[in-house]
Image 1 (tube, each protein chain N blue to C red):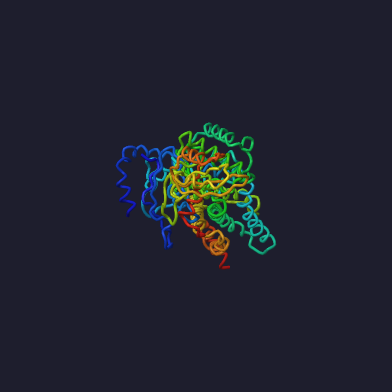
Image 2 (tube, chains in turn orange, red; image 1 turned 90 degrees about the vertical axis):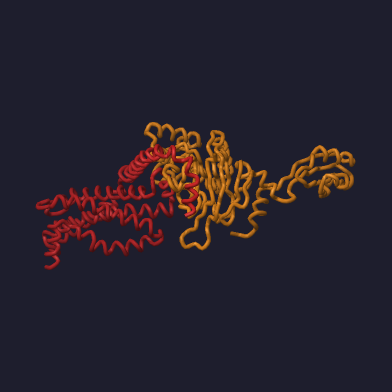
Length: 311
Length: 231
């Protein structure tokens, strides 16, 4: 049974002509990292808002960990945590108090919440900064504190809304590590992002949303296959003349001279055998210097599916 | 419509654990409610005590001093004006402190800090979060109003005398005034755009200042006010 089940979700904001979310359906299995991708205004934030009880849908249903989020939002809130797009730390409190009060909202006793808060500060590299006001935190530190806060009540599902937007590379790598650790602990993660490298690296499966609908849903690898003619092998060969005739039998071939008596040859097709390609090249009198598999990037797939128009 | 039909189709696996779940969330709701109150009181009375006192007491102190002491002493108002003024100042403080302590934080939380998004994820219904804000703001109003009494005893030439006060009326005003103020503040804080809040304050508060809160004086002082204004 999936831990998140979204079925025919619809949302039309009051006064809006068009539905912001127009029948989104997807399922997330327990322990998965699931990505929700799409251009700005595609309906990602509304979808997440509905799943996290903050937006009331106009149709469809969302079940999170067996709880209908519309019918029983309180039970749903006990099971989830959200890392929002924009920092929303409690500015009247210190960093440590942000964590302890959050745990108090979720019913943790005083001793337990102090212990957990100190643990979290250490885990997120904020040791010794617990008594600072959160106003004084840098963007990266604030982001880490927000994630620490989200984890204070041991959520079963963690929602991250564009978690790495605006972070420096160090903070981003740290966050990626944390996400992988959470996954290893069995927490289900749902994240939205524009960063295709991030989605490719983190997500087990993802859905691409545009105009309020899911237009593709698969593993990153599966999505890359959607791009026509973007799979195959690239060989770097040491050979005197054009090697295309030797490779023709394998599939569609494209060659270009690489200088110093080398050629780059690309053989397109989803199942070109690397062994066969090497054998064919060597039979043609070439020496193979390098061979790599080419795959379209997710970015290519994304633009292919959603178009180049600005939103 | 479609929401209802789809939920019923997926309902069958849910009912079994449902009863225990409801009781669980009830306890969780109460805990969350109390913890949110604790957070607000911690901020108001520990973290920002100075600003709480300044915000609540500065204006009443000046009102009492100028209108209740200086004006009578220079002969611009009658000697008893202070006793007439005090109930009004208390009522005003009750109402306005409570109103400001729901509306202003909410406007900021909705627009600038987005803190409301985090509160809304605490395990209690959104309506209870509103109730919680009203309760806390009302308590702040009551605390502020009660602190005015000893101050008035020092500032006003006649001190504070309870004389023929209606205690029932006093307690009722002390409770209903700030709750009403906080509720109005809740409406303003959630319904009004952040950029317009200063305009709305001027438009809403000015009539209130001279009509609403002053009409909830104790019986004796209202009578005094009547006789005074007819003079």
